[in-house]
Length: 457
Image (cartoon, rainbow, N blue to C red; front, side):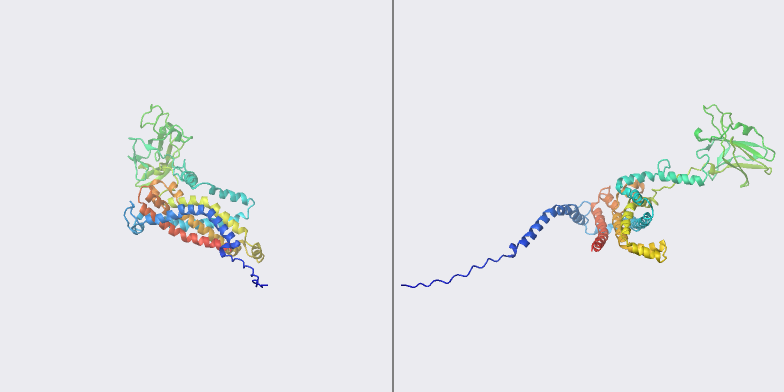
């Protein structure tokens, strides 16, 4: 019987080793990454198309001439600092960066602190924040109308003229002028002087034209009574009247019955260059100098009677156009600054404020030594955010500044647009300005991002 040896039982097969790619956790992580890429990809494409590509294109275009055909290297950047108009835009941008953020941060801080003390704080904040809902285009149109120099159209000059006229008398007859051949000549001060001297004991009639019937004061009376009266031997009388009869029936140079006197006009008797007496015309236009020394005098109507009316302030003149536009910017952004600072103020630890009050500190000391230091991070973020915004301001400057003073109000953004598309047709220089503006804004943006990250941690 043959004996066969049986093979030993084989060991169980070792399980196959999985590679890193087969780990379920890794597969799940990779799947989530792919899904994230799918969702982020449209945003990245838009960011590349709307931000990255324009930045790169502008940087490249800034190295070519106006036509884009000839490479000029840094010539456009050198021209920025050689062009007086561009230097003026840089100066104005500097004024914006220095003035507007400081004023807005200060106003926002003061208003945020004060609104904590009022009963209707929420309503007050809402009213101040409302301008943020108005587009810069609409705000520019509003302030362009408000800054109109004509007081009948510009609300600011209407208020300015109203306040001025309360404290200063208006000229009685700004449109009046002497009747030709009426014995009056223009003097150096804008007034009128009799061409011939008048002796005491005599009377003189001074006729004027150019006064509209509706501009004659309501108290004016017919002038013939004054002209008929004879002065005393040591006096000098006369009448100032409107030498015009409706319908053209009157005789020029003669006081007619239907002609009215011009009341409220200042009159002076002048001798040897000195004023001997003063008077003001009555309701019938008459005036009377009494107790004069015997002799001859010239009768003068000072220029104050005919001065042009005060028209207010030329808000959009070259000297004031930039401050005026900054004022419009403050109107829009004050609410934004106040709301952000008020949010930071609400998060302050109240126990520190109450402890200071219990230690005897007054409100000013609490504000200066506790509130402001604790709000420093919020104030910094608000300030830097406003700096970024004022560097890019364009709409208000372009809309509010009239054409003749546009160059005086230009900032970097408006100068960039005007050079590139607003008639300059030099996109090489415009691109260089765009790159310069980007280089100025990026540091502030990086600083703000770091502040946000730091506050998040």
